[in-house]
Length: 253
Image 1: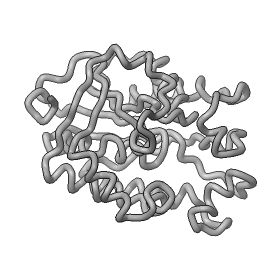
Image 2: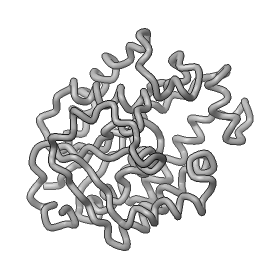
Image 3: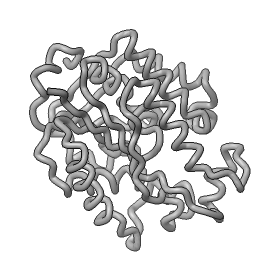
């Protein structure tokens, strides 16, 4: 029977950046791998900081930024060798009242009540995909969208093994990155996944597919390659529950 892994990604790039090699390895071993991204909704006529998040990447105001990014995500899934991605219809934080870059990494706004909607959506997603394993962020870096995803996913309480990934590239932007949810994960055992050459290659191709983000995140494709090289072919997680038996000899150390 085919097993299913579900990666719950806050944004259109997070799963590939943080766990793309692991997703590729799972697919290579015959798993069905579904990458579901939460905040993917197009918003017509963005204004203020929301518009700046688009134009500071060199995109004209009339471009449907999120449609472009959803296309990048489909290309990334193809590079990883996984299923067509799932895009949930929720708005990113700049469209929910967060009005500056510092606000994206501060406390949740009291009027940001999206958590209940996310919890309902996650329950439906779990019913639809029936995963045997879930991969999701730890919220390293403290981005409010990542925090909302972690809280809502934990609220859904899926009785499944979970690999909580270290959110890249926030993990490499500071020697001690912000970890507002550290207490939720530090008691869980660390799970290291060592990537083989094909998985590293697939991850690199998937990350490169997010072309609109490379200049902002890494200074360009060369910067991305340097950052990925510095990871030494390793992805790190915290494991909740027991790893499926067929993965214990598959580079999961």
